[in-house]
Image: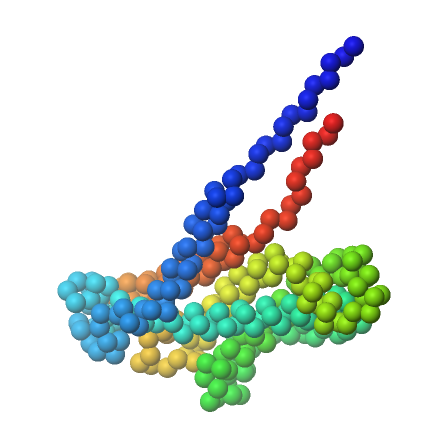
Length: 286
C-alpha cells in the first residue's frame, strides 16, 4: 500500500503589514516632492525676483545653488517654481483619466459608438504633441495656463481612451454585465457600477502615465514660453533662461531639470505601487 504524501505547502504571502510598508515607501517620495513643490514658495529664503549675487555666480554665500542669469537665487526659484507645474499636471491627469474612463467604458458597451471614438482618437493621435500645444495656445493667445491645460487634455485623451477601451472590452462581455444589461440597467449604471470598478488597476496605472505625460507637455510649453512668462519662477522656464550659462553655473539648469525628472519618476512609481494585485493565486495540484 502506497503512503499518501501531503502536497507541498504553498509559499505563505507576505504579511499585510510588510506589504503596506513597501507601498508606503514607494508612495512617500512622491508625496514629499508634491508637498515640497506646493509649499515651496513659502520656503524660499529670498524673493524670486531679487538679485542676491552676480549673474551665474557659483554656489556659496546667500545662494547655496548659485545665481541665475540675473543673479537671482537659484534655490529660491527652484522652490517656488514647481507649484504651477504640479497643480497643472495633476489637473490634466485627473481630467484625462476621468474622460478616458467614461469614453472607454461606453465604447466597450456600445461597439457602434466605440468605433467612432476609436477613429476620432486615431486622427488626433497623428498630431504631434508640441505642434498641438502651439496650435491651441497660438490660436488662444489670452488663454495662458488654461490653454495649456486644454491642449494637454485634448492630446492625452486619445491614447488613454484606446487603453481603457481595450481593458474594458472583456469586462463588458462578461456574464454579470450582460445580465445587468438584460435586466434593464441604464448605460450610466453599467459604466459606473459594473465596468469601472473592475478597471481600478488600469485606471491607476493610466493616471501615473498621464501625469508623467502631463509633466512633459506642461514643461515643454513652459520651455517654449507658452504659459508662464519671465520673470515668473518656473522649472521649465528656468532651463530655457539659464541654458546659455550652464558652464558658468550648472545648477541653474541641473536643479530644475532634476526636479522635473524626480517628480515624474516618483509619481509614476507611486501609481504603480497603488495598483492592486490581480494575479491569481497558485493552486497546488493534488
